[in-house]
Amino acid sequence: MSQRATWWLAIVTAVLTSAWVVGLLTLRFEKAVSPIPVRSATEPASSKIGLSRLEQAATADLVVEEALFYDPTPMFLPTEWNSDQNSLPSNVLSDPGQMFQDFKARLVFQRDALSLNLPEYGESLRQPTDLVSGVEDMARLSGLGARDLKIGNLAPRGGYVEVVSMATGSVTYQAPLGMQGLGGDLWQPLELTGAVTAAGVVGQLSIVASTGGVELDQRIRDHLLKSKHLGEQLSPGFYRIFVGP
Picture 1 (cartoon, one colour):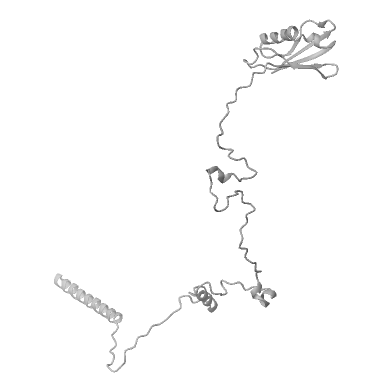
Picture 2 (cartoon, one colour):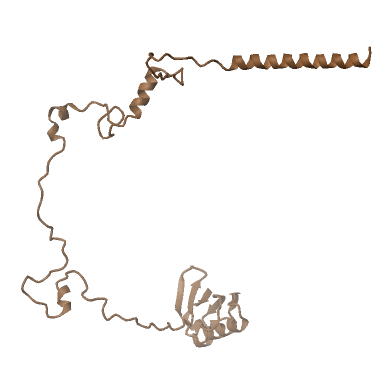
C-alpha cells in the first residue's frame, strides 16, 4: 500500500471517530435535560408542599408525650408532670378549710428576760453609769479600771527529805531539807541507805542513786548528819532516805 493511501485511510478513520463521539454526547445531553412543560394560560397557578416523616419508627404515643413535655403551659398549673396523683386523706377532703390549726396572735412582748432596768419615762440620768445601775446578778463595771498585777517568781525550793523504814515500809520522818544553794543547778533525786543505833548513824550513808554530781552528794550527806542530826531523829533500824527537789 502506498503512502498516500495510508494517509487517506487515517483521515477517514479520524472523521468517523469524531462523528461517533459527537453523536454520543448529544444523545446523553438530551436525556439529562428534560423539556420544560408548557402551561396553558387558562390553568390556575397552584403550589404544593409535601410533608415526610423523618423517623419512620416513631409511634403515636411517643409523639404525644414529647408534645406534652414541651408544652408551653405555665408549670404552676397542675398537670401530670408537676402534681402529685396520690389521694388526699378523707378528713382533708371533707373539711379542706381546717387542714392547719389556727393560733391566735399574741400581741405582747416578753419582759421577763430583760436584764436592764431602765428608768421610767420622765426621769433623767445624772451620769452615764446610771444606765447599768439596775443590772442584777452581774458584777457592775467589772471591766473598768482593771490592771495586770505583776506576780513575782516563787522562792526556789531547797529540797525535801523523806525517810522510809525498811522493816515496815512506812514513812518515819519527812521535813524540808533547809539547805541553801540547790536551786541554781539541775539535779536528780538522791537515794541513800543507812543503819541507825542508839548512838546514832553507823558510819556514812550509802548512795544508791546519785544526784549527778559527786560534790553535791557529799554536801547533802554532810547536811543530813551535821545540820539535820538525822541519827537523833530516828529510832534504831535500817532506813532508806530520799532527798528530792
